[in-house]
Length: 424
Image (cartoon, rainbow, N blue to C red; front, side, top):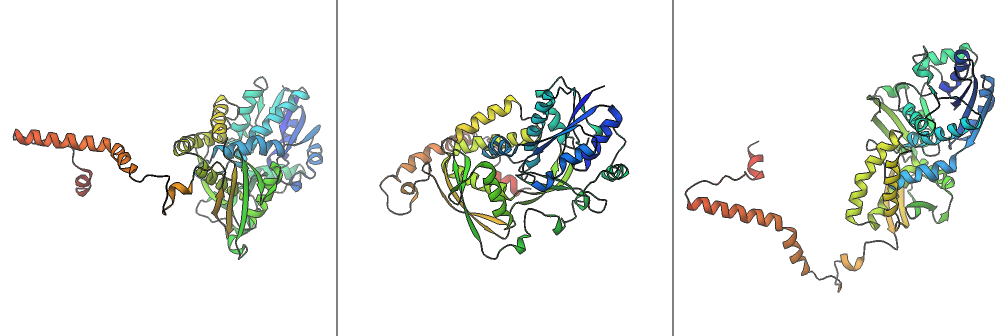
């Protein structure tokens, strides 16, 4: 039996009841680790006192905001990683960081077990335990949701009430939320029916688009080597930059997605996400790449992006695979410096300007006016070579037809696509 257990603690419903449950079932001292990843001061207010009142021996509150943005959000942004076509990976990116700090504190207090409050149906259990397996393979992991008799959030609420543990969740309003500097996710409640529209009062970071200002707003985002560094000409640190864009995007109703996603355990689930600043950054970063990177590099990067997204979603952050992807991405970002101007209006984002000293766009080559840098007659030779495979095939087909005609036989040629489609 473990003597000291270090628990990843948020003060929410699940981890609130885990502290007394661990004390009751393992007779061990419990050390809590709460991570500040930008979920807001209100989320962490009173967390240490609550943990101690629930039976924890100590609760460490760790400010991880800078590291979260610098070392997790920005690399994922630079990779262009998007999961299931929409999800900007807010929850997934945070878990390896929280788990890493949990392991560091476990070493500091000589713990002999780790614990988390993830359910047995979700992705977070994998993300936490992938980090544990890499950074603390010697420490056993306790996952109460896979052990106890509690089977629903309603059961968890009853458990908390029976022990006098204060919680925010109720049986009437039972959304499961995850907040950090990058996003806010909503699951549960009426969202469990994928045909049920989100309730307007559920949203917390973004205004209803129809209620957004009637006048559009332009925002200019500056990048250096693929990393965002400024908003409207003002240089900002990573945390301040994301926070500023959250405010700007949020007041225009930008960054809402409603997604039926594929969990790692094999089921589909429905979540609604608010990522206002992240939506602006992804839009601007992609547009700057379109201006600066050549076609082949863009194509190669687009192949890696979904693989990177899968890696992050699955919690495989501490792997050689990610390090290799980052090495490639970093090479593509060396010249990705410049600005992109976005226009926000009623929930929409439009690109209205982009500039970079490394832009491959050159007006001298693309102008429809008179120019002296491009010889249009050169295009004839290019087209002849570009079409060479098609010309060779056509010539061979003509020769085959002629040979069979001379011998009064019929050539065995594939039907043209138009003939095949006509017969469908």
